[in-house]
Length: 221
Image (cartoon, rainbow, N blue to C red; front, side, top):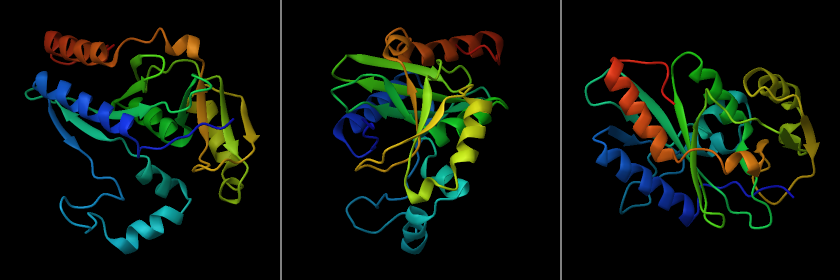
């Protein structure tokens, strides 16, 4: 069964809101990034131009996928010259509870993290009560990457496999049957690894503590 991967659900919005409230409580400076389908409050006018967003929806090159999958929230420390991206992910499928994440954005974020552009993944599974987090440069073991066999993915298989092996340390990359969803490639993390991940609040706390203690530190937990 392919997972349902969608940011347009109440659980995702609630997680984003909780993350933003916690960032504010910790006196961090944050900005919620406008997605390509966002509209200005109180109107139906798009933040991004219609011509660009319409083409972005159908363009399947790595550049377009990077834009569509960019992290939700940008975070800066109020005094130190450090910051990170924050990505909110929620689990909707009730018959299985492995973590499923869009594979290409995960690859991109893992790659950028290696040069200091950190990204914190916050994850919520309301059925299991998981509210966990990990940094993209310290990934849990990826069991496999699945690519739905649809026309848009035919020319991307080798590209996704190469990135998955290099940045996700995953050599199991396979075709799967398409679903009714986005049919984007997705990475799978076993539930037994998900349940032992620290709470995402702890990740933020340690990042603040480690950097304020040293001025700047690669060891941000």
